[in-house]
Image (cartoon, rainbow, N blue to C red; front, side, top):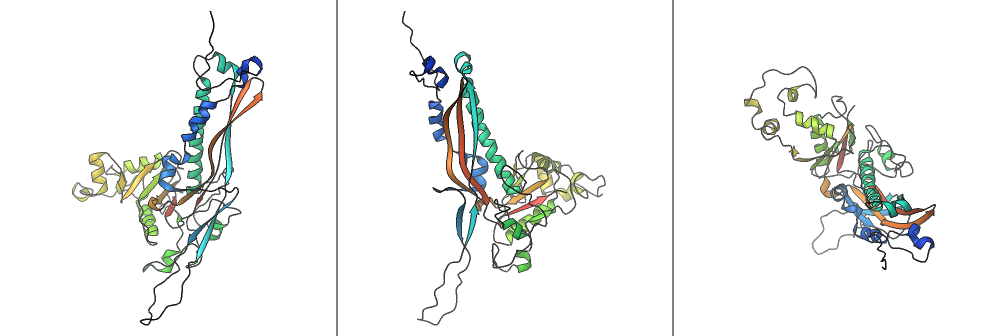
Length: 359
């Protein structure tokens, strides 16, 4: 009775190799399937990052127009002097990241289920986790040797934030900024002293990890609004989200800081009616606070929260090469597959975000 060999759905056999090519099967179908997998489809990338593509390698320079042209009064029929657009550049560091997945001949030959598929699906999830982690460390200014990010916190100078050699991921507006030269410019009737305030500050009441001070959110909204942006997003950790939920407790919301033991007397139903606390207690749902969409993510550090105008995409995602798969055979009965991508992340809109740190 003739025997017809059927290869696995994720593999194709190299029949000319030793042992029929069992140890050299390559993951052809999976590689093709990854062609439709785009890392920029991640929710965190779609909401806060502007995707860009480049055909060159290494560091990439992005150019932005500055608010340099103004209307002027002219004599009727005359021609005013021509004005030119001033530009600034942001350099984005593009690096390659990858993961090598190895499976054995025995996994392919003897497994009752396809461990190759399981291994590669887990590798793809690792890419999701990697990009989310990278984005969070860039936005919140968390130090990481892997991504080259530094600790960006209260008191950091604008010069430190913008120094590419030591801080390639950039940041929001730092302290000691100069008006109309660099990243901050005069706007509307806002005073220069207000426009140059740092967008990194410590919580006013010294709250601990995972705690929320509502006055900090109001200050963040104001800082962004001074430059003509409208804050619409509050990005925080599950601990911070828990603190927001506790605001529905009539006692804790009137304490001197979240979690304090002493309360202010005289809290009644009448003076809570129509407030955020009262409606939260009724519905048990928190979707917004002060007009900010509340987004909780476990990757966010429990010592920092971000107030953002997500409509302007504060982060640039520059992709040199999307996620690709390469086959390899390292020997000893192991089939290898490399997943790699080349990209860069950097905060390029310095005025649309504020980071509050709990101390």
